[in-house]
Amino acid sequence: MPTLLHIDSSPLYGRSVSRQLTEAFVAEWKSSHPDGKVVDRDLNATPISPITADWVGAAYTPDEARTPQQKDLLALSDTLLAELQQADEYVFGVPMHNFGVPSVLKLWIDQIARVGKTFSYAEGGPPKGLLTGKKATFIIATGGIYDAQTQMASFNFVEPYLRSVFGFLGVRDATFLTTGGTAALNRGQDRDAFLAPHLQAVQTHAHAI
Image 1: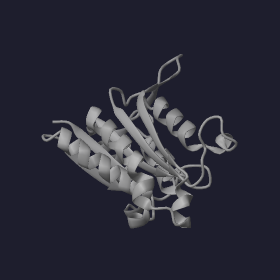
Image 2 (image 1 turned 60 degrees about the vertical axis):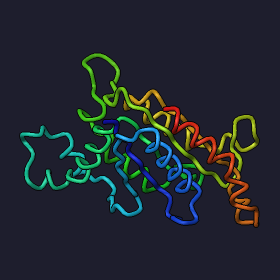
Image 3 (image 1 turned 45 degrees about the vertical axis):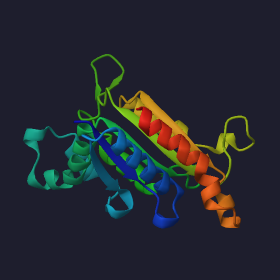
């Protein structure tokens, strides 16, 4: 039974473009995978604290040597890791915030980027990603236009960051679907007309994978 992990990071909910697009992706994926399972994780509804020195110490302590306090510190991380490891495919809704990813998504990444769980250090060799055989779709919404060859392209730290992080963790099959220029919706552009081609692209991709 295939499993899709659906993660949203926009705080705007009903006004969110990325949430509307991931919702369409999930609906199409369910239609194409009637025997599939979807796990939803709303990062704005999941309290995630920044990592601390104690958290790092717990993460680098062998499982069998951890104290009860260390296990408590890693409890949320372990839950998020289990969702990630058990899924075959991922879909992320990612609005651009100040040229980068939302803070809640960065906090989530800090929780799941753990040595021995999602990457390892081989003796004498480079780090090795452990999330192999996974497929990821990143649905990005940006207020401006940051496409390659545009004047603002160098300000886009969303796709390069996510591609690097997930590549490091072993996820090589990654698709990025970007809806740029969403600020036009705040200036009265018709939402349905604006989103129509992006919804089509998302649904086509969800059906194909």
